[in-house]
Amino acid sequence: MAGGPANMFGRPATTSENDWAGNGTAEPGSTTTTIMTGITVNGGAVRAPVHRAVFKPDTVLNGTYRIVRPLGRGGMGDVFLAAHARLPGNFAIKALQADLASKPEAMARFKREAEIMAGIHHPNVVQVIDFNVAPEGPYLVMELVDGPDLGSELRGGRILAPGEVLAIVQQIASGLHAAHAAGVVHRDLKPENVLLMGLSGQASVVKVIDFGISISDSSPAITIDNQVMGTPEFMSPEQALGRREEIDARSDQFALAVLAQTLLARRPPFKGDTPMATLSAIIYGEPESMAAYVLWPASEVEQILRKGMARQRDDRYPSVLDFAEALTGALDRSGALATVAPQSQAVTAPAPLVKSEPTGTLQIPLHWSGPRKVLRVAVLTLLTLFASGIIAARIMYPVELRRGISIVETKVRDGWGRFMSR
Image 1 (cartoon, rainbow, N blue to C red):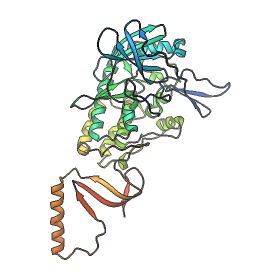
Image 2: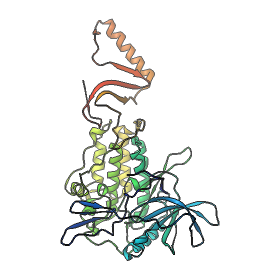
Image 3: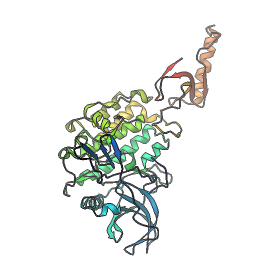
């Protein structure tokens, strides 16, 4: 994703991030699958809608909100930083694109997003404050979140410890549960729609955003059957098949389980070379095991994740809170919560758990002991061996102990933490 100024959700401005693809057209007689994340698949071609800025800086909307500068853009509209004309404080303004404002479906979806979000009151869901129509077009006003989105953090090389992942999953589950209680299914949960709001001296507060393609019990349906909506890697099987009547809160649970495994293993459980291949893997395949990509026993955690990602809705947990509770217990019993993440590193692909080279050193945090204890045990062991005359003249695997880190000469099989000793 192209870099740019941080938007109101903290993520970079980009022309490849899309949440609606209503302007895709197909050639006569061709078969087209529209995936409502801004891509239209037609004979293998992928197109994104053209973006046009709606508001210019210093524009005052209905005498109340003054546009300061653009923050980001998506397939359905642009996001701006705005100041209140009479009161202190800043807000985020999401404006529908000018070329979409004349389309009844786009207008209905945009207004419906504002109504749905305004009806959800929870600290883990971004708050919608106002909705109105200016001469330039419709817009909605949201709280300004000071922090990046999870997707940009991962692309920037941030590596999350299992405890951090759990805290994020728990807060997302709490926010989604509030939405589900209000009869709303998000339908597009992904790292880019999760904001990390930093508070001084405290852990990040998670905010779920973008209900643009959500469905609600209290609002008329806009999506038609067999229309595939969402982000391929995080779609449930019922979404991937376009079965709108089967989509419910358990569909969001599937996406949350996919997100949890993606964060823990730093690679998605379902991945294909194309969006359609990814959807096929979700419908017919099984999630990839994460055991090779973590340094703690993962069997019980995998059982929890696989239940959350069960192909049949009835085989999943009753609610997202039940899933989060089960994952909490499994991570605790596995010892994963005692694991500390290595220092973040800039990567263009999911980062390995430990920094490694094709042949070189592998750093493994020793979380079960402090440096002094390790050194004391090592010295006592060496003295015992020496006194017994067992020490060989040549040591096959030199081990350097410093600050609780064991550096062992290894041969790395691949870039994801699977390794063999020389």
